[in-house]
Length: 335
Image 1 (cartoon, rainbow, N blue to C red):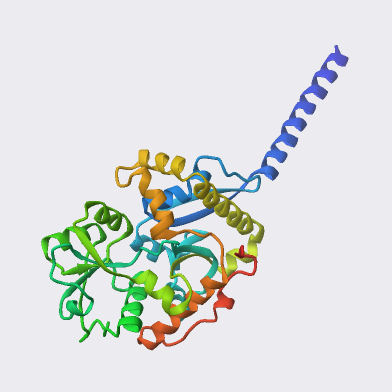
Image 2 (cartoon, rainbow, N blue to C red; image 1 turned 90 degrees about the vertical axis):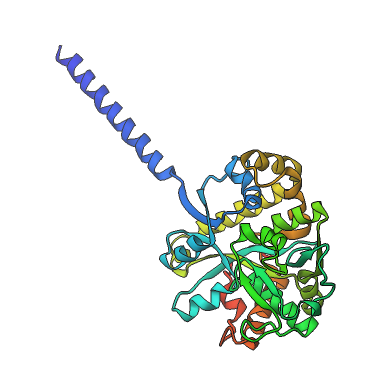
């Protein structure tokens, strides 16, 4: 009888030990989580589709991605709530001025090959045929402080000689919530507008509007680099603690982009089912003509960042131009 009790006790201890070993393996094999905040835009859901659908995975990390509106992205940056956050190129020097260091992991919004973003739109039957005709008129913009708007002003200033100052300049700039831009142009609240990408796509389809200039093309002609308005950033202290996790995040994001580029019809159809705001065809047009999400850093991106900062200094927006190489992570994927 004692022998059976001893055997039973050994069996119990063995089971407990086995459970402890399994639990130990489970804890040691648990994936790290990398949180990512990005702009709430249906097209960006296409960029992240491969990660969210499990087509791009990792044995090391899980990516928890959150879509935020611009005000939430801005407020979340100094709070350091997320490991990686999509931010404006102009946010880097502004953050530095406040004592906050941001490290660039990759480029997020670059002008697409078609360079048909950042157009100056008017109604088809409007009397305005040239940019000079708009002198003294109202131009609608979704954000006067946005990096994209700064690029537009640079093109108008440097190529067309327009005084783009918000005070006493050639145009009266009006900030309007993005969803209301097209209706404001239609109703005459403004005489021209810098439409967001989805609105530009719709405006072209209706044939009721005209573009006086594509400033993305103008800036490329002026500076030899596509405009860059947003980047993915993190913080030095986060990188120091978990460099391998951030390397893996970069890899996954880049592979997700490549999946979208290689399968635009499939991805476009998938995200169109998730929202009524865009069509499947729009995603393909967005990648081709309006904006591109590189998830890498190129020499041209560095040039674009330095250009917008340098021009902003000339415009009195900035006092100092950051060293672009000093703000880019050494292990960023290079193009």
